[in-house]
Amino acid sequence: MKLTCDEATTICDKTQYGEATLWEKIKLNFHLVLCKNCRLYSKQNKLITKCINGHEHNINEACNCLNEKEKHEIEKELETHS
Amino acid sequence: MSSTKKNTLNPTKWVHLHADYLFNYTISRINNHDLAKDLVQDTFFAGLKAKENFKGLASERTWLISILKRKIIDHYRKINSVKGKAEVKMNFYSDGEREGEWIEERVPNSWGNEAEKIIENEELGNALDKCIDNLPEKYALVFKMKTMQHFETEEICKELEITASNLWVIIHRARTQLRKCMEDNWFKN
Image (tube, rainbow over the protein chains, first blue to last red):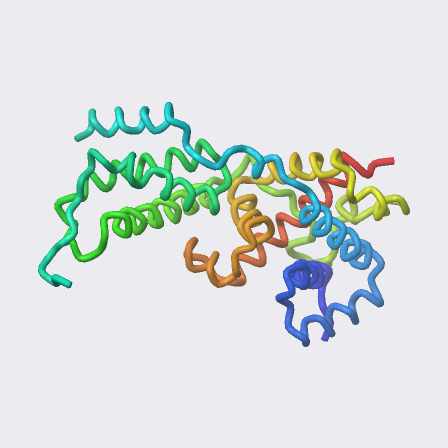
């Protein structure tokens, strides 16, 4: 029943993806009642998840394709190797 | 339907026919433009080298994807074996009497009451992106696949040839590191 903070926060991370088991969640909640640090972690972890889901990430904004120049470079490289 | 017709390879048309498809496949996993480009190029090279082994049973594209998948796993293995510099700082004691407890200077501090309200803030999102970029690559890759590309756990495990418990250790390290980074760079009062 007893978890270390390391284990408790790992379960907390799993809950962010809805992948903790019922038993894990029971153990986590038991730990959270007793541990202020992990309660804080749990709260901030949820905030981070919310923030990631709500934010348009820079990496996704850039065009996800190869431009003609890049394709041409690959073609040239391929020619020299074949 | 002719079962005798075998698929053939036509390397001079690879870039034209398959570069976009392979690149999209890669970028949806790796989320890094230059790296994805290199992996696609490596895939074509490896395909050229191995073209004698092509039996014509699968389509050209399927065959190239199978090579690419291998390249992605190899890349992951490579970054996973890089130790040192960019290693995530430990957040919990890893041995001794206090094993599993928070290390004092890594204990979460309160982010203040306004933290909930500023979640929509664009700058906050950018700060978070920066923190994600600061993760060691081996953690960032798995974290992004899981959190931003929304891959199933099972799928990531299969594609990177890791176990589910490996995956959660990685997610755990990435998240504890992110939390600390956000605290130090954004929520510090």
